[in-house]
Image (cartoon, rainbow, N blue to C red; front, top):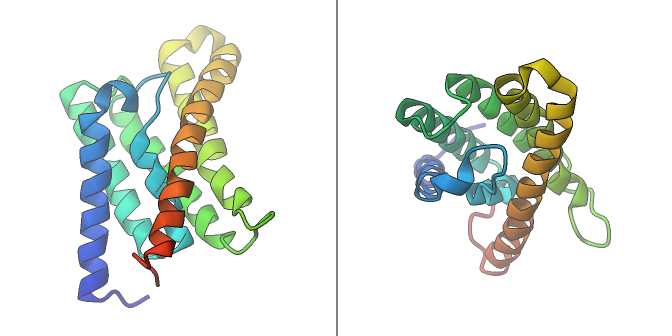
Length: 170
C-alpha cells in the first residue's frame, strides 16, 4: 500500500486522537472495568484502511505512556499484548467490512469486543488473579468485553457520521 502525505498526516492525527482521549480519560481507559472511549476508532478501517496504522500507533503509545506513568496496572505487558489484540482486531474489522447484517457490519464490530475481552481478560487474570486464572479470565474478559462493546457502539455512530460527511473515505 502506498501512503500519501495526506494518509501519513491522517495516521498521525488518528494516533494522536487515540492517545489523547485515552490518557485524558485514563481512570476509565485502564483496569479491569474499563471503557476506553478511544477504542471507538477501531471501526475506522470500515471506511479508511490507513487508519489501521494510526490506531495501532495510538494504542501502543497509550499503553506505553500508561505503563511508564503507572496508570496502566498491566504495565509493559500491555504495551505488547494489548497492542497485538488491537492489531488483530483492526485486521478483522477491515477484512470483514463488507459482511453486513441488515446493513450493519456486526462481524467487524465484534472483532475488537471479542479479541480485547480475550487478550486483556487474560492479561488481567495473570496480573490480578494468578492463583485462579480461569475465574479471573471469565470475570475480567467479560468486563473488558462489555466496556469494549460500549466503545464500539460509539464508534459505529461515529463512522456513520463520518461516512455521511465523507470524512476519511478511501
